[in-house]
Length: 75
Image (cartoon, rainbow, N blue to C red):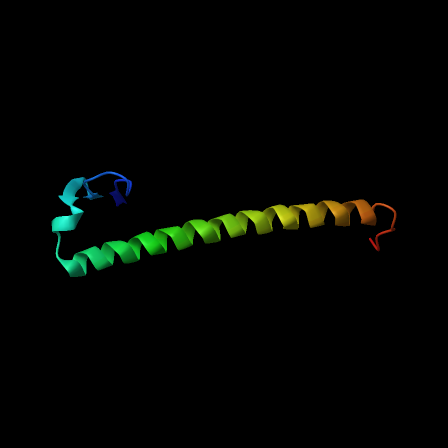
């Protein structure tokens, strides 16, 4: 699903290889599209959060490895 940028005159919805004039669709369908856009934005935000957490975890693992180099292991 994609829509054209909001700065263009016509809002076009592309869904399953078909295009629709978003403004001419019934209100309930427009609301579903808005809901999907919000869901897409939230997914992107959470994907970015996961990337940040993964980088942070990787950095912690590097720190742990560095600190453990001077300590004898039990096996």
